[in-house]
Length: 417
Image 1 (spheres, rainbow, N blue to C red):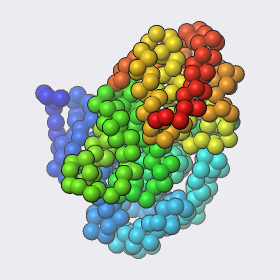
Image 2: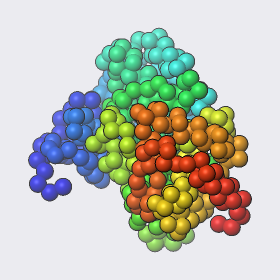
Image 3: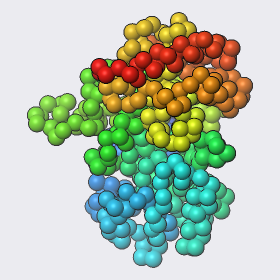
Image 4: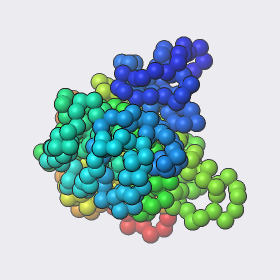
């Protein structure tokens, strides 16, 4: 990015801030990585930060307090966050927020609660607490809390600030770095939503230590997505360390065992995601590489009654897309094998008998084709770190889809890693 014109940071159009003394891209646009996180400036002028910090809820850490700016705040947390961090969060707010200027509510999580009713409930609680247009909402939890509260903030009084503290791996590498909010409706995942950049997106890797392994695996699915389409080195790292973020406590002082591995994986996937989003934040171009794993997965989730978590459905989608690429002659057998094998070694499903049927997967293709403006834009790998688009429904004959599903079923039955 040599030759860029830089100037000192001031308040962003979306209310975000930059590191003190940091510089922000003015022209050309892009993503700047610093020790404290990432700063993004999009071609349409939108800019925001994604912060990485340690001890975000420690009273001595001023980061969140600086973003609160003494404003009235209505805080929404998941039940898990309330159980694990509720007391620490209240202590922090007592230290850094003005007395009587904040309230806290616990809201239900899970895909079944990611609804317009949940958004209306958040707005009702905010109104009852006297939240005005100068105030903000604070979401502390995983992606569902961020999505629901972010959407509520986008429509409350025609749009107010919100802050998200992302406590899950999916939240930190996916939801936490973008501008989309949304809820499920009309039997469709994320049917209603808005593009609403957060006033601040705060990420503390220490939260990941308390996550169940299933939640870590779901986050790794989103990281595998980025590695497959953009970064062979990241993919190779995951192949060597499929137990990343789940490893036992370090027994040696090597770089691979002191947290540097997870830091590299986390920061690389966050940066890759932001760089891909930056030129197309509002999705004017519906052909998006970051939609790898997100063509079949919405129906896998909804038709399966959300039996599979989002990351698990994405893994199934990626495996199916890899087999389609192989059968269409767009990727070689080794590429397909490596992708499926990595997903399985991480512990993710690659086949779901209840939803991976020719009828339902054809339905998923048609729904995606309609949603993406009568173009399929199916992302398929052409190698590790490379991908392409399959644009038309007719490019995937029924027999090819059936053969891919048969191969996927065989993968799902294998016991060897």
